[in-house]
Length: 356
Picture 1 (cartoon, rainbow, N blue to C red):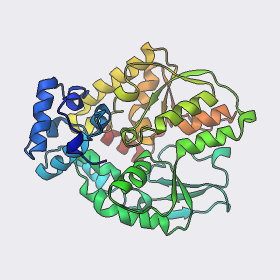
Picture 2 (picture 1 turned 120 degrees about the horizontal axis):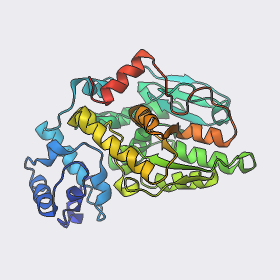
Picture 3 (picture 1 turned 60 degrees about the vertical axis):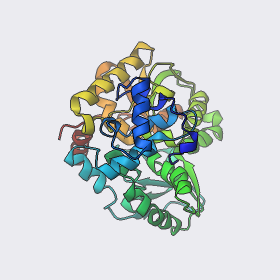
C-alpha cells in the first residue's frame, strides 16, 4: 500500500470523509493537491494516523501513505513525549520462545500480552508462543508520523521470525499481521513462513468444534483496530466467527467503513479531551443501536476503552474470551481485563489516553 498517483482523480473523498479534520470537498481537494506537489499541507497536522482515508478512497490511491511520507519529511506530526517513547521502546524486550507441543499452533504475541489470563483455556493449550520486541513488527511507528523505522527494520523482524523455523505463525497483534503481509509485499520482502491472523485461527478452531459451541446470543458492537485498514478482508472473517457463535454485530453508524479509532491514535495527538469525545460518540452509538457488549480484537483498544464502556453499561469483552465463553469455559478474570491495576498497565493506559 503506497500512494498511487495514477489512481487519484482528485475527488476529495479521502479527507472530506475524515472524522477528525472537518474539510469540505473543495478544501480536501486542495489539501491532496498540495501533498501531490510535495508541499506542506495542513492535513499533516490534523491527521491522527488512523489510515481510514485509504479505505475511503475507492480508487485505491492510498492517500494516507502520502500523508505519512510528508508527516515524516516535514516533522509535522506532534504527539505527547510519553507516547513517542512508548512507541520508541516497544521492541526493546528480548525475544522469547515458549515451546508447546509439536504440531500445535505457533502464536506470535510480541509485546501485547497486556490482559491478565488471556492465553489460557483450550484455545491455547499446548501452543508455542513467540514473545517480546524481537518479533514485534513496529507498524506502530506510523502513529507518531514515521514510516522509516518500519521500512528499515521489517526485514530484520521477518528474519527473526523465519529463523524460528516454524512454517506457519499466527499473528495475535493486528499490527504484525498487517506488516508481515501488506507492508512486506510493498517493500519487496520475502516472508518464508505462512502468516495467519488470529481471527482466522479462532474461526477455524470453532468450525472444527461446532458440536462444543454454546450459542451465547449476544448483541455486540465490534471495535476494529486502525491497522485493520491494511487488511480489510479480516472484517469478513469477524462476521463469520460471530455467526458461528450466534453473536449479532449490531448495525450502527461508527462501524466498518465509518469506524472510529479507539482513541489510542487520537488522545496523545489531539489531547485527552478530544480522545474522550470521540470515544463517547463511539460508545453511545453502540448503546443506541442495541449493543449489550463491546468486543475488542486489539489489546490496546481494550485498554483504551474498557473502563468507559463498562461505566456506560456495555460489557467489555476481548475477542478470544468471547470465543472461550462460547465454548463454555469459565473465565478467571473479567473478559477485557477490567480491574488490572498493575503499575505498568496503569501507566500505559494513562499514556494512550493522553493523560501523561
